[in-house]
Length: 289
Image (cartoon, rainbow, N blue to C red; front, side, top):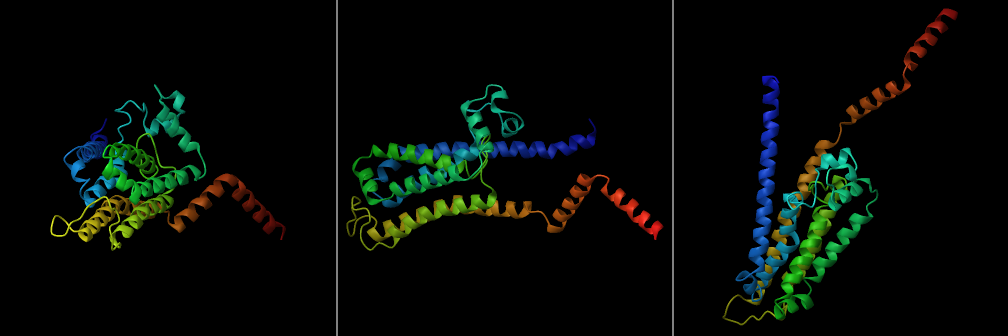
């Protein structure tokens, strides 16, 4: 192996190590955030302040799932035996110790059409809306044990969505980048619309949260903080993803002149000896004339 080869591989190796470090950090942050918001004292305070309940909701639905999917813990949890490259080169049954997740990753690559992704998007919007309507939020206040049901259901739905938005070995998004941008935007706006209802309300949106004049935080401030938490948390995750996919999409687009040149070269290869035959015919025509 030459010195140039070693030098050429060093940056790639360093980049791979940095990527693994970032993914491990994201996974640890996801687990820590999930646990901290699920147990006292924050879980207890979330039953008294709407903005802390909104923080719980945002973490369970958006922050924890996005960090978890980016962390890609599937191999560490023995849910996957191969990488995306392994699944791409061969069938899942040929990958050593292939799991259900590996076979699912292979099926996702072979599936055509956007119906499964649309179903995931609809499920996300329904779950996001269900756990923010007054009926369920008031029930969370009256029955604190329901927070475990909320956390698990939102986490699962969020993981389903984010596996359609970012790569998580061995799973890859089924949609092209422009459609990922659209899916992220719709998901974000479904949360923002719910936040608008709370922020613009002149009366108590969630009546189970008591607000007494002169004590604690006011009703208006609590509801506006709650909306701000929803906007900030969802915007941080989805807007960064939207711009990332937008820049990558524009970067991957071919120059029209380069694409035309490639098509011409491909046509010449396909035609084979057609140019030579055409030249011979032209010379023969000149000789006759």
